[in-house]
Amino acid sequence: MSTTFYKSLGKTENWPNLSSIHPASLTYDDVLLVPQARTEISSRKETDISVKFGPFTLQKPIVTAPMDTVSGEEMARLMHRLGGLTFMPRVFIDEALAACERLQKDKINAVYSIGLKNALADAEAFKKLGAQVLLLDVAHGGMQSIIEAAEEIQKKLKMTVIAGNIVSYDQAETYKEAGLKIARVGVGGGGMCITRLVAGAGFPQLSAVFETVASGLEIIADGGIRKPADFAKAMAAGARVIMVGSMLAGTEEAPGEVVGGVKKARGQASEDYMKDNGSKLGEFRSAEGIMTMVPYKGSAEHIINDLVGGLRSAMSYVGAKNIQDFQKNAQFVLASPAAQGEGVAHIVGR
Image (cartoon, rainbow, N blue to C red):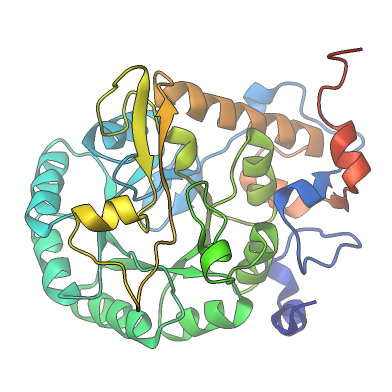
């Protein structure tokens, strides 16, 4: 049981109905949503999954990860059409600003990523082009320098700044004290992340959502989404949106060419990415991500629709017509390893 969980017990107004579960060390597979009795939902079409996220109203609570083999201008245009949002990756500033100018000209909303170096100057450049929201894209969101940079940008430029990644209630409270409204949550759970293998640092993803939601911040559940059920559970736990990355690698809208039926996919902390962006591995830095080739998947729209369909189905089981009711009414039950095995198709081979 984490010590921060005890501190968050007093913030029960921000928690979903957890029944008897202590959300101390849980991943998405560790729980199931309990179907409710006497629900008034007669069709999944009755569910409203729109959310307010910062200055945006999203028709689908999905954002794409700021990975250069996942998110680019084509993905941003698709997500805008579908009612979601794209987080553009950290790239060389001139390239990033050019993309921002093109998207802003076409009134395509996106979140733009910056680093700590030259953070205020880069933020000013994005603001001049009309950007409303920035992401301070740094792996460890607990660093004081990140909090100070976010606070400075918000105060001087009146922009929304998202920081992270964090995992605990204490970290979330520190963000609130600095005036931040949105946090990116999750360490080590990404599909192309090996932080837990390299640094031994991280936090079970569902528990990280529970912990940080208790602060009242708008939470981006980032990492660990492998199937529609994970999306539904993250939202039921209180996340405002979920962030998907590796699931969208290999899609038509992801940057990169299809060669032999595959496309490159890589984490931003991979050796492959760092070599292309001027960073060096050595005594003071190890790769915490991987590069791989993934099969071409067709349009990302199919994956987004599959995720959304799972969320709407979960809401119908819980009897919730909107996300607020979903998070209020959802009850979780622990799933033993046997229960997890019972939940997958098992007739094959009999």
